[in-house]
Length: 231
Image (tube, rainbow, N blue to C red; front, side, top):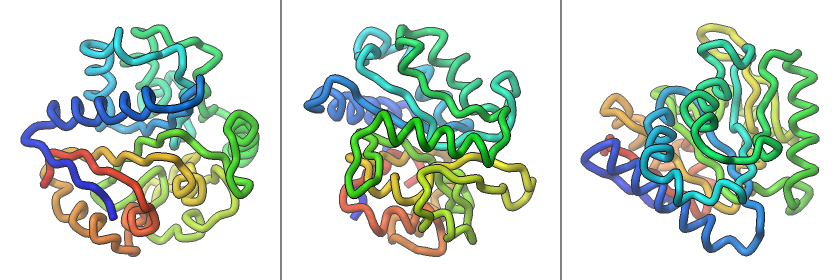
């Protein structure tokens, strides 16, 4: 069952998500907090809010930052999830550079998934041989995808790998994506989805509709939350 937090505006949703994340960090019993974030356009406003209103509140020195997914482009490319995060967030806060673990989207995807999976496996604690993130921030696409796991890619939802190469169904461009297994093993999963164009898909996801990767994840998580302005 997913807890739905719906707000009149995207700003209120962003504040609520940030407070929930801070609660997770502040109640964690470990020094380091391993957080995986998503890219795309939705988190831009959230990251700007962190800089403007939470710069001195979020304990940056404790954060180890990872990416849920990345497009297979260089960091300077406008489509790079890391590039967006660096410009909007990382260049404006004091998170230690050695604690920022980016996916190398410019490298050969099949090699990079192995390198990044190895890195994650060696930095995180494991449960049943699977690395455990303290928190994962996931988006939900209008097609029901999450991470870069698209409808029809059930093999990636069930993959024994930590990260895998996915292919966008329309552009055919490759991406590197966190698979279903580590998402389901995370201590906490927050979904963040904005816009009235997502109202219908969010209703399906909340029901746990397995036809959509986000619904597949929701139906198998015992503790997740959705922050939205769409319902």
